[in-house]
Image (cartoon, rainbow, N blue to C red):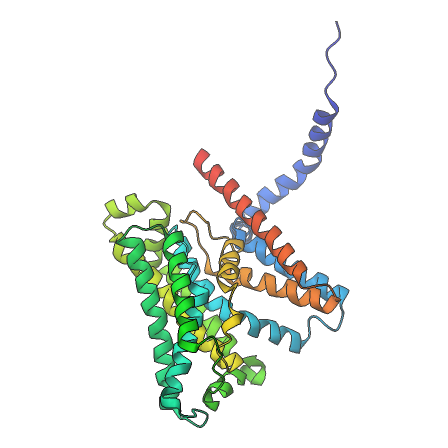
Length: 363
């Protein structure tokens, strides 16, 4: 009786393994060197692969539209357009690192912008020629408005024990409705010229918009806080296992309130930045900011379940939708294809996170 022949699938699998074995051995030797270990650790994270995806997308669009995509004007426009979204996405990263979610950031941004603009228009006066005192007052009101909503979110989640999804969905509707009531559904278009000058000003060899510098600074500070401080370690610990964090001596309720307060404060800052960029409250322009911020955070490698977060990945995740939007627009395709592509990348990112979590649980 003859031995059974191996199946075609097994033969192909064996051939692939044999062919890849030398490459695997070379990679193993390289990863044991000092430089190779750094590269291996870098590409063990989602952020590195997402960054590689971003570079590939930019290369493809520049190849398909030479002289149109990677121009100084287009790159500056893309950076300026993601600045506001990056600021609220940094706050969202901290919230999602705890295993929560903040759906309200887009409309907290809107509410903060409306209250700031109305403060600068107080008494029906024309604020166009107002000085720094009025601008500073508007800035403080924007930050304070965002902080108040953030603290409210934190109290509802931490003290009332309402699930974050429901709590922030409720404050989303409240902040949206109050913004519409305060403004009568009309954009406020009269702002100090100082704010418009801030939105249009450029720094660093007169090339980089000021709002981009502010957004990058916020992201850099967020990355340092999340990676190198006790506050960041506590944030990730709560997302990994809230009960274990509580038993380890972390005041979980207070920390959650602080995290949501940070998210609201950054949304208030983003509201003021939006005023500077558009010189109006843009009431109808922030409907999808919360979903875009959440998508950017997840695409960047932060886990929906908490315990894994990276601000660097969030920064890259914010850039991908804008690169797709700009590339499709330049190539003459409908911008809706951007949403299709982002949705596909988002699903892939969540699936990758699930695989990584299962692998970690099996160890």
